[in-house]
Structures are given as C-alpha cells and as structure tokens.
Image 1: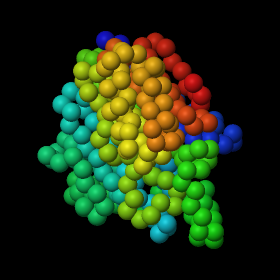
Image 2: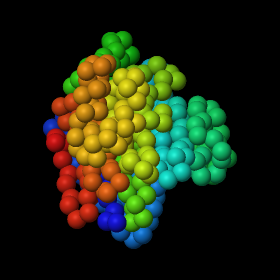
Image 3: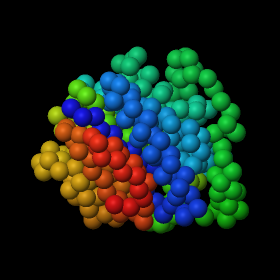
Image 4: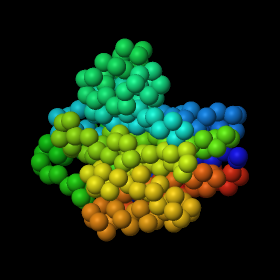
Amino acid sequence: MKPSIIVHGGAWDIPRDQEKEHLRGCQKAAYLGHDILERGGSALDAVEAAVVLMEDEPIFDAGRGSVLNQSGQVEMDAIIMDGTTLRSGSVAALRHIRNPVKVARALMDTTPYSMVVGEGALEFALASGFKECSEEDLLVGRELEDYREFVRTGILRTRAVFAGEQRNTVGACAMDREGKVAAATSTGGIPRKIEGRVGDSPIIGCGAYADGRIGAASATGWGEQIMAVMLSKTALDILKECQDPMKSSKRAINILANRVDGFGGVIIIGRKGRVGLCHNTPKMAFSYVEGIKRKTGLEI
C-alpha cells in the first residue's frame, strides 16, 4: 500500500494576511506525517505527529494559539482514534498542557478509558509525565485582543464565526503501508465560549472517526451542528456506500448544511489511500499526500 495523509487547519474565512501561515503549517504537518509513513511508521503515529506540529504553530486554534473562553482561560479538546481496534482517546476542557492530542494518545494507549475532562484530564496528564505550562505559554496576541473585545462589548457571534469569520480546529487522517487508518483532531474551541463548553472535536464520530474497514475522517467547524449530524461518522457511512472520498465528503457537508444549517468542513481518507475533502465555509486550509500526489490549498 502507498501511504497517504491529509490534514486540515480549520474551515472559516481565513484573512488574506494569514493565508500563507495556514498553508505553510498544513503543508509541514502533512509532509511530516507522510515522512513517518514512508519510513514504516503507523497511521496513528503519523496523525499524532501532524496534529502536534499544528498545535505548536501559533497560527492555529489548537494548543499554542487557542482561543480564550469568557473567563479568560484556554480550554482545549482533542481526540485520536485507531481504525483497526476502534479504540480512541480524548480530552476535553483541558488546561495548562501544550499538546492535548498527546494526552489523548496516552489515555488510549495506557488506560481502558476513552475520555477524561477538565481537572481530571489535567491530573491524568500530569500523572502521565506531561509538564504543566502557564496560560501565557498558550496565549497569542490576537486571542488576547479578541477576548478584550468580548469583555468590552459582551457580543457573542457564534453563527457568524463559522459563516465567515473564524476559527481553525486542526485535524489529520492517514493510511499506512499496512493499510491501517487513523484520525486525530485538536482545538481550542470557539472564541468567547462559556467555561466548560465542549464542542464536536473530542467526541467520537463527530470531530473524528476511523474504521479500518472504511477509512478515517476529521471534521472542523460549528461544533454543536457537527455533533447533531455526527459529521465524521456520517461521512464514513456514506463512503462505505459510494467508495468515493470526494463525493462522500461533499454529501456529508450537504447534510450538515441542509439538516441543521451548519458550517464546517471534513477531510476523509479511504481504504485505498484516496483522499476527499469538502467545506461550506469561505475557505479551509488543507494539505495532503496521496501516494505520489501532493496538494496544499485553501479552496477545493
């Protein structure tokens, strides 16, 4: 099997002056993950490494660069899933840890549990050897200014966020040389969310799903609407029927739009390593390596 990987850096109206950084970050993540696959690494290792890279890039709303909630805190969510075993690990409302997807992987690999949240997630991370960081270590200037605007105006614009403004969850799907698939997703959530709010990203079947018999998917966008249609699982259910990742992603996004008036994007990788993607937001940063084919872009 020729290994393949696809990553996304969020579906929204990415400002022109941020486009190059989004494209660069996605391309670096895809190439890093593909290099791992080319060297015989697993799909799980590839998606984890790709998402970690994007969590470390301050341009993305994940890890360093995450948005602030209404209390001025960074709360992050992440999931990783193994398509062979159907095991997953996820964390929600995690604070003070640089790479939430690593904690999710540790939970999946070392415990019988699938999700930990809030203080429990932080306690698990620290007990597992992860280092605690300060809020300032995760905060970038644009998010502080965004939070100050909310404090000044008190205005929430949840629908507008995904209809045309911001923000950018990250995710990855991969297939390795053995034909095994995996998916991972990570986010800081939506700007000015209430404390403790959890969106689709860490929820199995919503923010990500992987099934070795079908493929893998990762979603991004308006979390409440994505959860309503279980976007990632829905995309794979469609893929099982039509065997075309591009058509499947388009049909899944049509369901998101038509059933719940949702905004977002989804990336897919099929059992043969073919990739698909679709979004109904102005832009979605993505990059993929499909066998020998490589592409990085903002629009399909």
